[in-house]
Length: 275
Image (cartoon, rainbow, N blue to C red):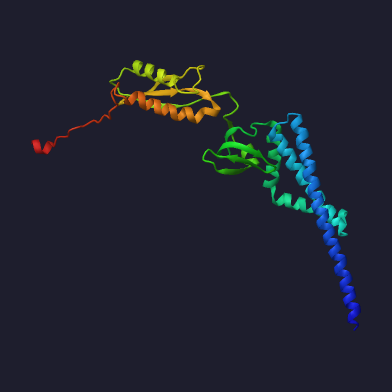
């Protein structure tokens, strides 16, 4: 056995494979750079056309996925793999995966409908799919939502699209709904007047429509007031908490009697003892 010839063959093979690997790495790096460059140009072009961020991100993500798949096929072709066979294999695998992962395709289709129909956009405050928060990104398969307690939540697009969607950012103003129990001994007209005057002084409370303070129901302790100021969506929570504080200040300063719980006491007599 001629070991010299064997070593030469191994050396030549390793050299050829090594050059191919280096070429593939270079092709991958250049391809990734070109993809990033092309997507960057596309985003700049779309930004110049005043395209909404929701649609722009969705288009960008879709193009990145397609170009990355194309890059992988090109690298395999560089190694001598028949790309036509690979494309057929990929199509067959995609069909099999699509049958097994119907939910994934449903999320993708729902993502397209969310972008086209636009029930919400990036930056909107919504409640859907069991999650409430600000939309950060509508992706190919999931939507990224930041909740008020600063938790990043990813919700499947199909779950969002199949559920009722409440968009709190669509209308310019939003109503804050609060309630307050007052004493039956207090004059409700005076209480309502004092509350309205105090609520008007809260920053960011809308002048039109005016705050509503009305009697909504009755309890044994007295009337229950519905207190409803209006504000811009951006100041909802500030007005919510400030209104609670205003209610406490008006009803707790001693100008009005405090509501007291009412108890009924029934005395039962022992008939046998009386006999």
